[in-house]
Length: 402
Image (tube, rainbow, N blue to C red; front, side):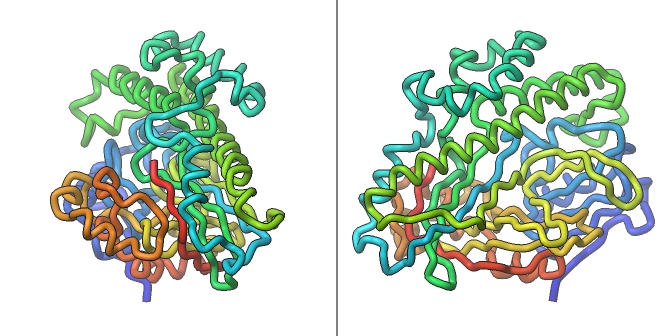
């Protein structure tokens, strides 16, 4: 049965309620949620998904409805981060016995980590439609130019690149033995710069009100503030960039794996969803800015992606439109230990054991992404069974990490 705990049921201490879809919440995440709930701009309550854990600025796995205001640090710096998945007309039996050449082909086609495409012209086709928007933003806020190397080129050469951290590209097999391509990334360096810039600006704008703030990271822009209008413009641009980035990567991956597979087509069941973003939505009688920080939209009938860690299962899900969760669900398994803690606890032998059967890098640089550093995905799914239903269960056989 789903687990749900509730804080501040009667708005104790003036804080709004917090509804949490798990009883496994670390102390720091709980304190962050309590701080968010003390903000006067909250509508109704704050929801926390079953993959909830402490984050930078605000809690990962939180869904935050705000009235006429937005908290830049709640979205953070990986604006528009999300997932893209599609199913191929290929069965698992048609995959080559040796999957390493497939992984190397993907890594050769999609720059990972700090790498990017070498030529600006390489991504012009994908970038041209959104170029005007970023040039307008950079002209309005020239300080952003100082936050990136070659700022008017980097966002182009990073289009169609993976990045680092928990970003990945995978080949997976579902319960019908169909092969899927799934990937996870966001708005890259330009989204990071936009996030950092406006978080600092919000803190500067609210400097005189810091004594009333539960946490300075939660400084916000209010309706009517010119900076809020500028932030919304930059935010929406970065979210669109992140979506196009995933589409471009998917095209590069399909092109890279084509020589290793029989002729294939892509099915109509394709999903491209953010899990770190803001959207104008209507909930519980009010128009709000809904921030999903590590959560996906789960409106009734809406398809979404919930990945497990490398070595674990992932899920294609359909939303149930649960109003209490603001029609949201988790964005993954969620970390149960920090990256530094994972590096101290696990060794390369542990990584090899926990990723058996998966063609992936197994060196010390990805130990922080070991499955043991994440929550039990099955428990996470059980805790949100009233938010979503499972449509497909996927198991990765190839994983490319950033």
